[in-house]
Length: 114
Length: 108
Image (cartoon, rainbow over all chains, first blue to last red; front, side, top):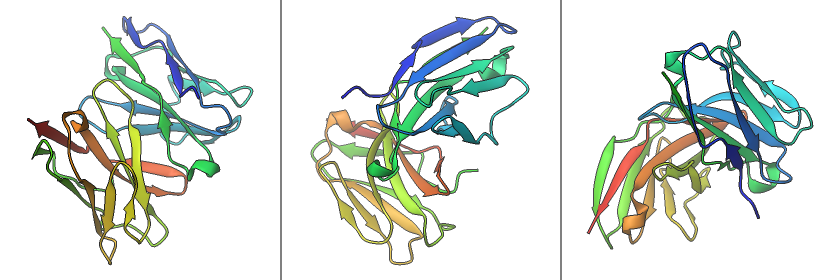
């Protein structure tokens, strides 16, 4: 069974440029999460989806970040415009009730904003 | 804000048991404790979870104190491949709260 797939693996952009990250969760997982992980820190939740509905986006900086999960499967996280402080690893995870809510993470996208 | 506290780093000799402690003194009655680990350049990987009782699976054992304010993850025979950052997390209201984790260094 394929795991959570994220792309790109690495992204380098200049500040003020837009950037997008893509995530394909494990088939059948209705819950999808986007996390941000700064160097030396644990993951911090940005947004959680139940199917296509964003049920928790309280930690998402909405002035520059947006996300979508149009068909309740794969998802895109966008930053526009990027700032230097956005440099981090962006992790996608999925889960469902059948797995006792344990998270399955992708390998992440490492973003460097110059 | 992280609700768990863990030591920043620990060393363990290869083949010996690694005991990783975690304090979760503010945990409520219906919050599970989950453990994940993160090997360099990969996403976190689930290890084990529990509510009240001790748990064991093929990867590790989880010992939860009776008052549930702390727990210990036990890797019975650590190998070099167990070198990673280990996160103790609380799960409640569909959220996982990750702290900064413990960097476990398994040495030959």
